[in-house]
Length: 344
Image (cartoon, rainbow, N blue to C red; front, side, top):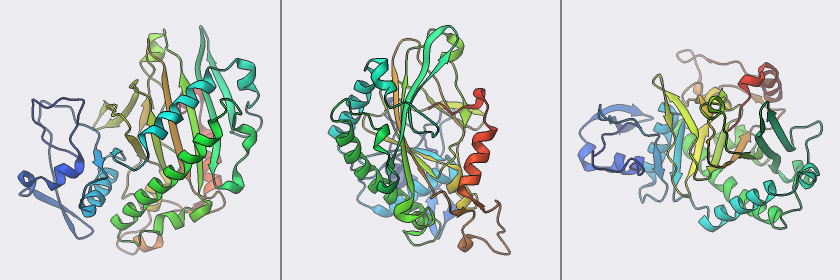
């Protein structure tokens, strides 16, 4: 969402998109209309760098929240949500047990190492430094797909905290998908149902990045869009996620306890291009440890995914091929090379 910001406002506190939409000073500049809702078109000061949208989910007017989420998804493909209902204490516990896992001796981490599937622990090496990426990757939903073999037994509360976090994350995801469905003029359950309902797959990847003394590594990592439908990500306080928009890379500002929402390839395809996936990359820090907790939400693997029939017709033909998701997934992964490997 674009907005004009007071020059005295701290750059670390971007205004909420809901507040921007509700502001009486903005009500005169109506330029665009989405699904019958008139939405103000705001702008940045020429002297300010644009902010990635921030949506306050506690706004009393839910219609404003829906409009803000839809607009951010159409124009940016990424936004942050605050006051989202996930307890701050739980998010802190998630970060504690994640850090405790990576602090374990290498032998204990290797006990949940990857085998043939993508799940498990892995360390990626780069010549000249000890490690440039460690991660722990495993499914967290649906229960029938969870393999606890890849859930570390240490720290002792790892499973308890992740299961509680999954319950809250799933609820938030479905709420956002409901608003995005409404933005398309569809029933709130439409997108969740099209992803497989209760069989939609949720996967968490805990990424652990050591400080990088190599300037060429610290300055950039892989550019990519997310393969799945939607990603909800929690970072630690060390910045590093960048988004490409309007021919420039923009830094995601850290907001304590915020959740970053990223539109993936499948929501773009299902919405027939209405919602945008977003090119983004991860950068590393020369001095500080960086940890991220993205949850990737993807369709059930045997589902056909493409533009929803309700959104296409003679005047709006499909822009994307309908294909079984697992084939799209395998084809995309096969096309990746090391320099394109998504890092987060």
